[in-house]
Image 1 (tube, rainbow, N blue to C red):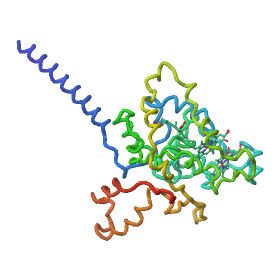
Image 2 (image 1 turned 60 degrees about the vertical axis):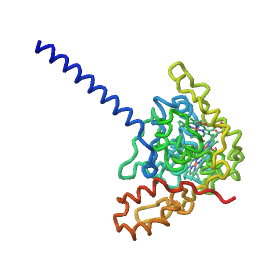
Image 3 (image 1 turned 90 degrees about the vertical axis):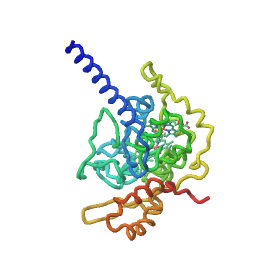
Image 4 (image 1 turned 180 degrees about the horizontal axis):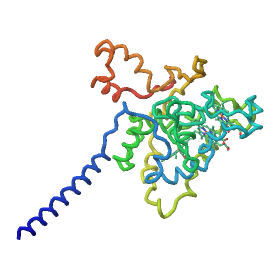
Length: 303
Ligand code: HEC
Ligand code: HEC
Ligand code: HEC
């Protein structure tokens, strides 16, 4: 009799235990987004459960191979035309990485081979070393937007998503690289560098080919609903980042122009104020974190 009682307890205990694990897991997934933690996470994170066709299509598109263009011997003719050295290895050059990789010199972004903790590169699985999802879809990395997508199971509005760094001014965002004043590949060099958004858009991720039985459930039910909305960033596109490469003792280094970095504009102005009120360690204060979480994200272009 004692033994059966024990067994009963064991079963009760085990079921309680599994309940707690499952419960905790769903809590973890409901983590609230928090803007002060925003960082780049890479394209691989979008693959595997939510956007597999997008990942596959992107992987096989030109943006899934932009890093490779920086290697010696690749596209020699095009390089010669703009007076670049076709035999040089540009895979660690700050002059190139902003436009050929993801999040370079920003939190969580790509780190080249000559940095302290270089990003791992897997040739089978393109990630931050290429121009990934976040270079077109977000202001400063997609990690917080992922929580919005998960929490709402995809049923979010454009306005909801903008609060966490998603942007919808696609035609504008292409000019982060295409026809940007820092690209060597200007329309004046060759006609093929002219940029027609409507034409080019069609080639960005051709997902139609990549639907299969395994990923049918990833069809975006709310996409058409969202397409009817007009986001603030569509009405007033965001300022495009300007940057310069400066020669430093340790070598060339890329700097963003402060006023053109959308999510930083307020921060620099306010920093002084926080230092004054909370001392040197102001970054640890609750008030600072709250300020970052609630700050205005976007630096809209003046109309
Ligand atoms: C401001 C952004 C920007 C910078 C900086 C930049 N690129 Fe690019 N690069 C682009 C864009 C955009 C294209 C695609 C142009 C197109 O197809 O219209 C491109 C295309 C290329 C191509 C292919 C050209 C062709 O016709 O096949 C090579 C090679 C390349 N870049 C190498 C480099 C190297 C090396 C550097 C650094 C010295 C560099 N890029 C710096 C934006 C940039
Ligand atoms: C070069 C820029 C670019 C890159 C890189 C890119 N996208 Fe897109 N994406 C777009 C554009 C532009 C659209 C809108 C297409 C349209 O309106 O027809 C879009 C639309 C989408 C949509 C539909 C959004 C909605 O709900 O309306 C999803 C989801 C998406 N992309 C996911 C991804 C994923 C995942 C990746 C990376 C694997 C990625 N994208 C990489 C430019 C990009
Ligand atoms: C972070 C930089 C960056 C951004 C942002 C970007 N591109 Fe590109 N894009 C490139 C580079 C680099 C290439 C060169 C790839 C190659 O030649 O293999 C390229 C190539 C392309 C190509 C292939 C050219 C061809 O005809 O073979 C298309 C299409 C394209 N981009 C469309 C877009 C569109 C549309 C957007 C905006 C929604 C966009 N790109 C945003 C960097 C960028």
